[in-house]
Length: 70
Image (spheres, rainbow, N blue to C red):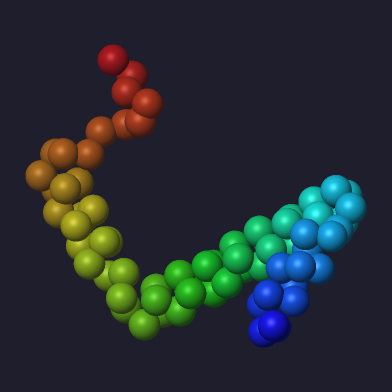
């Protein structure tokens, strides 16, 4: 049995409250990892194209308030 299978077996045996706590920990850790990756991509300039697209749409009048005031 590999390590992941051991963890899966242990998790399957957790009481509901412990499982909930572990699931919340995973969600928080996953979100933190995503935030770090996004920040690194931003600093590296990998997301510059999004700002350029947004600027171009703003200049061309394609951007409007949300929710629409109409």
